[in-house]
Image 1: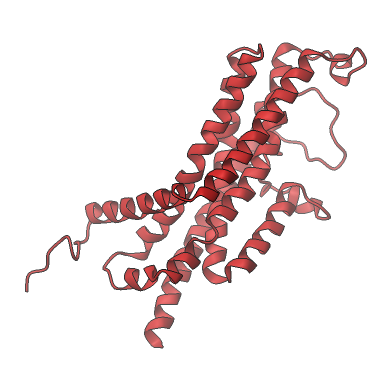
Image 2: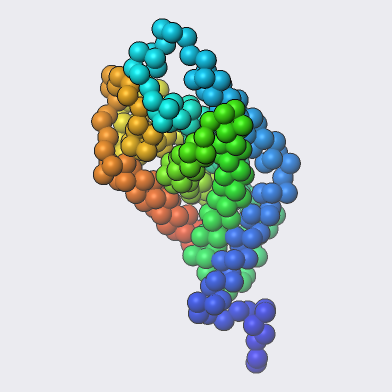
Length: 286
């Protein structure tokens, strides 16, 4: 009996690619069709623009006794401070928002019967899990990039040079991009094995601990830090006194911090894949 490829696609790299593309596209478009998604990211954009405007105005009209005057900041360091003022808070808030926006995806698939459809097709769970993470990551990362670009544009309209846009994009690529990838991957993995409300609360608590470290400075100061603690002093150096308890950093530690974020994302992707396979095995046994 001949099987039509469009009904049961064959194996190989080409089939895997199109399976991955189909899941990625579906996840991205499904997120972009939710009005709550855009309301949430509009609020994030407004926060970033307000922080950028506040920093740009403040550093243009410094009082004589300001710490920045006493430390003899250069124009380059003022630019670093403006970018850090906005993106330092932005990465902590965005990672939490992005994860909470995607954490309901596994539960929604189950409710709409997508899990049964997935089990009835020859598509592998590897491409399905990767497409789910990549689709939600793309859906959230594109608006975040636009927000960072708008923040840089606002700073330039307020009189700061083009260099501030380059530094903003550097903060986006080296801090927000790997941090949000880890956040989305971990959130999806948790939501696959836990009820969605427990996953939301559990991830929120974990994110607060690794970002600002309320009552748990050890985890915040570890290389699993998600707020750029090791990266920002390298890419946006500021001659300010160090805060007690804050670890010292270096280009090597900053690189290692980024690698830890990527490793966390890869580990969470593996756990997501394993959870999907385990669910299928349990369903078949039942």
